[in-house]
Amino acid sequence: MDDEIRKEIRKVALQNAFEHEGKTQDKIVLSKILGTKPEYRTRVKEIIGDISEIVSSINEISLDAQKKEIVENYPNLLKPKEKIEEREGLPPLDEAIQGKVITRFPPEPNGYPHIGHAKAAIINAEYAKMYNGKCILRIDDTNPEAERMEYHAAIKVGLDWLGVEFDVIKNTSDDMELFYEKGIELINSGKAYVCTCKRETISKNRKERKACKCSLGDIKKNNQGWEKMFEKFKPGEAIVRFRGDMKSDNAVMRDPVLFRIIEEKHYTLGEKYRVWPSYDFAVAIEDSSDGITHAFRSKEFELRKDLINAILDTLGMRKPYQGFFSRLEFKGMPISKRILRPLIEEGKVSWYDDPRLPTLEALRRRGIKAEAIKKFILSLGLTKANTLAPFDALESFNRKFVDSDSIRLFMVQKPKKLRIHNLSFSFVEVPNHPIKDMGKRKIEIDENIFISENDAQDIKEGSQIRLLGLGNVAITKINEELEGDFVENGKTFNIQKIQWVSQKNSHEIKLLIPNQLFIEDKFNENSLEELEVYTEPHYLKLKEGEEIQFVRFGYCRKDSQNQAIFTHK
Image (cartoon, rainbow, N blue to C red):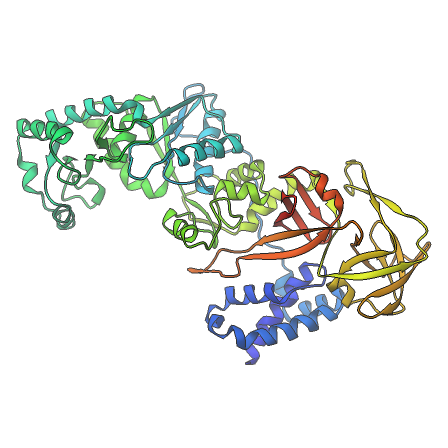
């Protein structure tokens, strides 16, 4: 193994150990190395031995020694991480009048809502609140091929969890007759025509900026074509196109689609309609007719601004102010349905609530609070700069919400037995929180307890350790099991402090640890760790979904009686 990669391994291991009270693990270091040096994915078997050796050597030295080595060789690791600036509210709106602002959030029910949907919903709702206006939830359900009631329901559930409130709730499909009325109006004005060209021809003409023969048809012919779309033409045989500008540098304006034929059953309307409006046409008509004053959407729709204005100008309809913001994604956590669906179909992730995903269901299950998401999104403002945020930016906001309400419990990994002699009591009372008054819990004990293997490795015969909430033990024997004597009024300084659980009533659970889902563009096969750990019986008394801080480990959420999910440090 070359010196460069050994230095990189040691750097990564030192940083992780120092950030986690002096201890790191082979798996964690390997995952981080492959993230920074993807070329080593083909050499995992070659480097795993070096990682194990280096991790072991670092775990053997003290926290002070680790810090000294970092200061001497890698001082940049000690620089504080860049923090997301927390702002209060959003910047003022252009053309806004108090009491008159109306915004909307128009999600399409073609997938589960994610962090990007949360950003759009929160921005629109917050602006309505800032100006004492109204916000409309408009489910954009005009593509029966892709939309399902399952997704419609998931959007409602996600928005309720976020606490986003709307003044009006409607479906875009409520206004199908209005779309038809406006479509006929465009045809009769000569600004729309029925096109029967093949898809390949349409695409070729748009690329070459060349009008097709269908655009030469008169109004009578186009009205006849419109009627045939409802009865005679099959899907793909005819569309209605807006007469834009085939020479435009903005490709969106090159005679785009206004209506197309879809024969899939709609999840609420069944087979009532077969001619459906395009997204651009429906948005233009709805925003104007719903009285929207400020229409915000992510910046990939910015080129459509010209088309929406052209449609509304042609129809003599009121135009809203159009604003744009950057999409929100987390590094290594794509939000694209095109990427996420295959992962589920192939069994690489369990479902849309898998804690590695950026969906709202997954974030909730992981233990991220809705209030933290809102604060995080508002801290980003209304910038159009690309927002590919590190997940720990959201974690920093979440930590403020979970810390004060999370019960502290002891938990051990890879349990090592410790027998304590001279123990004169059968239970201890431990505070549920170090600062906040959350009561105490009673832990029944006898002479047999478990401690974590990592902590046991550092214990020397003849030394004293302090078992948190219980007291000091002087270690007298170290073999497969450890033995020691309980020490009344033992020393409190310069002593190893560790958590523990009673052997007789410990509760075994599976602890899921979500890591980054993708490293660059490759699925991370180590993105979900599973640990078998032991915790206190008090865990069984907690409600499902309750947040816990496992002492010296991190925040976790109770997923079930036998499983918890790691939230973050």
